[in-house]
Length: 328
Ligand SMILES: NC(=O)c1ccc[n+]([C@@H]2O[C@H](COP(=O)([O-])OP(=O)(O)OC[C@H]3O[C@@H](n4cnc5c(N)ncnc54)[C@H](O)[C@@H]3O)[C@@H](O)[C@H]2O)c1
Image 1 (cartoon, rainbow, N blue to C red):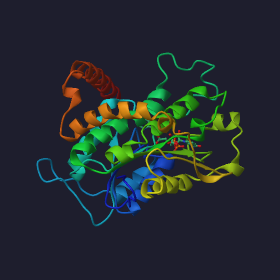
Image 2: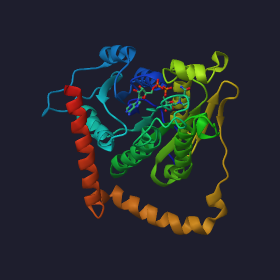
Image 3: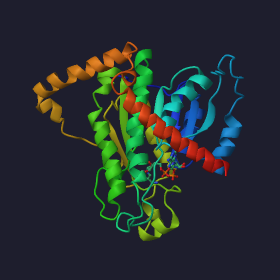
Image 4: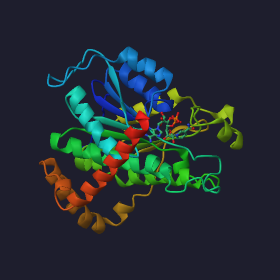
């Protein structure tokens, strides 16, 4: 069985990066279609702030029953740095607290372009490639968090990752951005079986050129931004919606959308089908791990616990520093 047709109505939808750009357009569509939406972003653009004000409903006092509506769409904003895994985990708690259940849909839309037009070559990053944390690690970790939340509840779940045409083709001036998008396209291709195996459909949308604030003036100038081939944020929001809803786009779908070719599903060689014995031997353990998870087993509380404790501690410190910084 697969997730199949999946009307996006009366669902709980998390949208990272939904505070602006093309992901905000998707937020508007999801609210129009009567869903409960959690925007997870560092901040809201003024337009998004206004939208949240117009479409939010009062939150029940803590201790009372969570505030759940079904008569119309509803949106909340929760501040989230997607590079901080504790922030990503917190999104499930927010969903439980505000909407009484774990999310049904995750749209990983938060993303960064390189710091400047040639930042790999000018060595803008001194510590780490933040872009890899935001563009590559966040969608991957968010997927795992979503699976963990859904499996014990037998909830059909969709994860739509906003990748890019840069995830399919090389560009010498922006190798880190392209590498980050190749990473998530590769991840989605690997996770194709999760649709059939676990009822978790994981897909990627790869836009061409879209007119959003990602294109700062210096990047536009350096890259000769071509107005004649740009798509609108709404075009891509529609594509994301279509891939989520339509059962003809199963898990593993990588949907490109460009001015030149419109919407197109990329085709890849199914290597696993060519090496069937490997598939037979390697799927078993994964099924067993996830079967246990479905029955409530929590691997984080087992062997990896110490590691995760250290990690969570690191994240907590980072958040405290962030709070200090915000208070200053
Ligand atoms: N604009 C394009 O031409 C284009 C083309 C292909 C793919 N994309 C991808 O589409 C996605 C959305 O980009 P956009 O064009 O709307 O850009 P945008 O800059 O308008 O929006 C990106 C959003 O992500 C948020 N964000 C950035 N870092 C974050 C963090 N650490 N934590 C939480 N939120 C964070 C920003 O605050 C912003 O609201 C990105 O993944 C981008 O790579 C864009």
